[in-house]
View 1 (cartoon, rainbow, N blue to C red):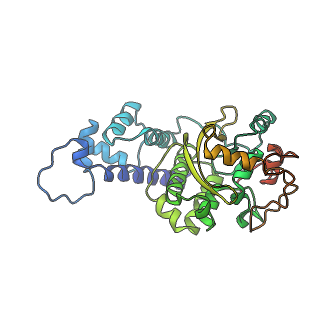
View 2: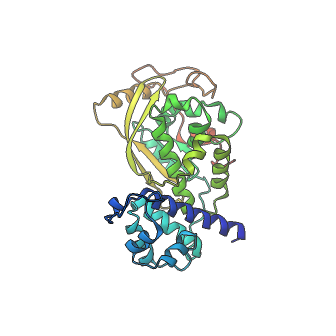
Length: 333
């Protein structure tokens, strides 16, 4: 680890702990407040130390970015004192591991999708699904997943470079506000997910390159990145606006692929007989296209070989979609 890496990690720890401390109030922490003139936002350092059961000097050392040698008991006490949620607690542990070098992370995903995984994607004919890496590159998708994300694939951002990347689309393509009606929430979540990934894989040069690019090109991204928020991407409801089938509120599950470190599959599964289910069925009937243009207007399909209720010829397989999305899905920032 270089001196620059150490300084960067210390800065990350300092900013994370100081922003968590700043959001805590004495009332929330259950501490008495004497007088009304507090010069700090949130808790004082000595108050955090009191809550965590450690000396003030030791807490100051931690907040200055020195987590080397911090035991699990210390990290748990600090997490409790700052009332960290599960994602924040895990992030603190990731930062401590990076500081001590006590545990090596699995290598970053290569982007090469195993054939069995591609077959699983293709077998989900009625559910949109895609696989992404830690950099939010979509490295594979089934035909319905690609149809659902047509506005992303159709972005001029990816006409000359690949692979398709949802974070770049979100912050660098003005059309993202049409695709994500709740753009502010999507932006907040995306940045928090990326911050979580940087804690897990601080040596991922492709990921750091993406962060640098977005911080330089997007003030919206840079402002959110400075908050040091983290979040797990596991399940929820995603609201999208598709140019063909309109507004959708789609429940999703995001699952890590244990045999492929760094890769995650996201599957959308609406309730039976819901408007979203009907919309996806309609979209599935339109996935029998003859070619994908990737143009800047419309949906990117040159023609429909299937009608509105059935598909007369199959859409692209997950393997074909992966190849169209940029080969093996390496980061190219």
